Image (cartoon, rainbow, N blue to C red; front, side, top):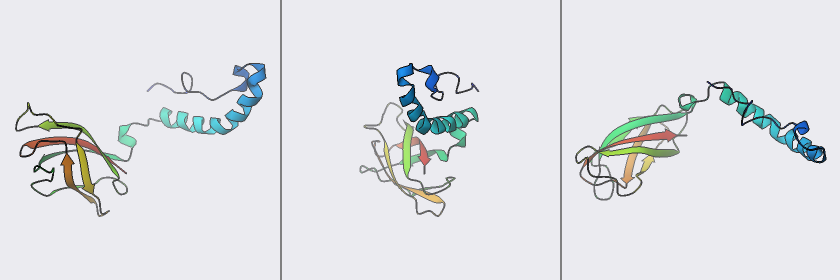
Length: 139
């Protein structure tokens, strides 16, 4: 992994600026440099998608004309906390591969905090066909 801190992201050093601006840079750097250093440390220590508190999940689902699942769709959560957001990354109609979402698929769900999440509705996909939906769930 490439090291961060020597290229695009580095702490503010007043000597890197014109003499007339150094006082202002010194005041600004007092506030920003601790946060910049924390970010550099996080990125240098291997922050990646695997170390985030997220769950990548693929489900197979059929919805009615209103986007409601024809069969109850619940999955086990691996999140540390209640799910607050789901982002759809891929939606594939496995019944009719030439059918595409009619809008950006949006998932409505319930997470009661018991370790399972229920899909209540998916807007933007055609009714009656089986869809493979891949999404990211996060706290």
